[in-house]
Each structure stands twice: as C-alpha cells, then as structure tokens.
Amino acid sequence: MIKRRMLLSALAATLLFGVGDLSASELRQPDGPIILTVEGAITNVNTPDGKAEFDMAMLDALPQRRFRTATIWTSGVSEFSGPTLTALLAFVGAKGKTLRLTALNEYAVEMPAADAFADGPILATRKDGRTLSVRDNGPLWLIYPFDDEPAYKTEVTYSRSIWQLKSIEVKD
Image: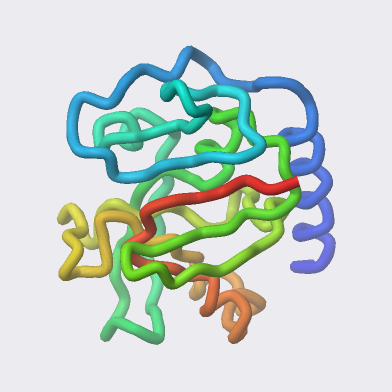
C-alpha cells in the first residue's frame, strides 16, 4: 500500500513541480523577520537575486496540515502543525528534482522533491499549539507523520527531519 501511494505521490509531484508556475498569487515582501529562504529552480520570487523569502505570517498563509506523532527526539506524542512542503514548493513554482535543506547550524541534507507529497512532511511551525522557538527545534522543523506510516521510521527519513530549517535550495 505504501509503495503504491508513494509511487502515485511521486507522479503527482513530478506533474506538479514540472509544469509551469502553479503559485496562486504573487509572492509579497516579508514584513517580519525572514524565517525561510527558498532558492534555485523556482519561478515565484521576491528578491532581486531570484530568491523567495518568507516570514512567519507568509508561511502561516500557506495550506496547513496538523498531525499527532511521536518522534525519536521528543518524549510522548505531540501535535505538529505548519505548511505542507508540497504547498510551499508549489507556491514558489519549484522545478527541480532535488531539495537541499539547510539548518541554522549549517547541517544540510538532500532529498528528492518527489518526497514532498500530500500525506508527507510538513514545515512544522508549532508543536502542541505553541510556536516553535530556536530552543525548541524551530522556528521550522521538517517533520514526517511517523505514527501514520511505519515506512517513515527509517534512518533516511529521520536524517531528513531537519530542525531549525533556514533554507531550501531547489536543484535540477
């Protein structure tokens, strides 16, 4: 079942990220502190050097998802919420096949863009209703719904669950 769903999601992601700019509106300038920068193979930008910069309000305006899950880094089950990675990539008009995610401490990981699908990872901005601070692995934590899908409980997926996320580079 998971293989079929992942295959269908990969196909959907390929269609979504490979066909034109699907952003719903023009990307405005951030009013608050920049939380996330997206660059590379994208079409919807808000800086002269071709990047998309987001403050918290802009991230909150994207389609949100919430789920409850346990992680290997926290105790018990918590509710995580935030924009879906799929929505963010669609909004910026991502055209690449690989994502390079970088944290505040410069830890970086690469993942296939096709791994961004509807039931997949979110950019968690909140845990149990509270905004994530840097001290609490925020302000952004790419997290998977580990308890919803046992196939997410792998070393590869754990390594992609990057906290204190500051930037995403979309690569061809």
